[in-house]
Length: 214
Image (tube, rainbow, N blue to C red; front, side):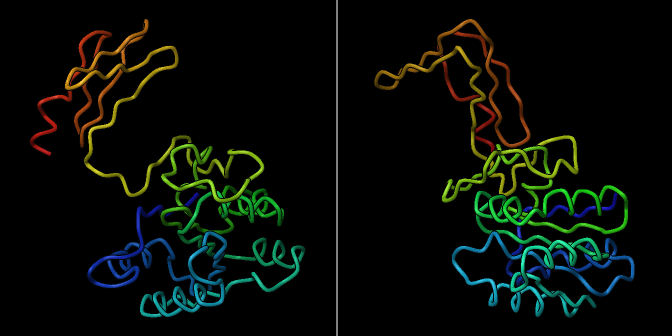
């Protein structure tokens, strides 16, 4: 499989500009792409297609979306694609549309067999994982299950920020009283602070000192 999984699309340089070199390398001379805009909820899919088409033109890629086609034709378009591109937006809405149109198995087959190369960003990166459980998006739609494409054997959290996050196991809890915090339960938890990982036992709880340096 050949995949390029981007965290984001926008930067000060412009839409997808920061990733042009990586996109060209992944494309490997392929110039026509099937773009799936179904994560778009704040822009209509026609506008999303135009945005991505214009953004990828300097990278030598012509992106076209089959969203206007009947579901069966949309599947056939994906099955014939050499490049499959899935953009960002809302991951729940994206997964709902892919599942309803029967596109999940078609995409997985194409990419797993090496017949198509895959580019995704944000929500498009989320759905490449086994599930969408690590998305930051609000559940604006029922995706009919959280299982996704499973193109990689791990979860990705796009737009990861350097904030202190407590990984709280089932059976544990956090009690806050004023400026005092305590973790109860039988299991050790784990702080994730930037690139630092700190194990913590039940008892008095405080944000690790390394958070101040992030």
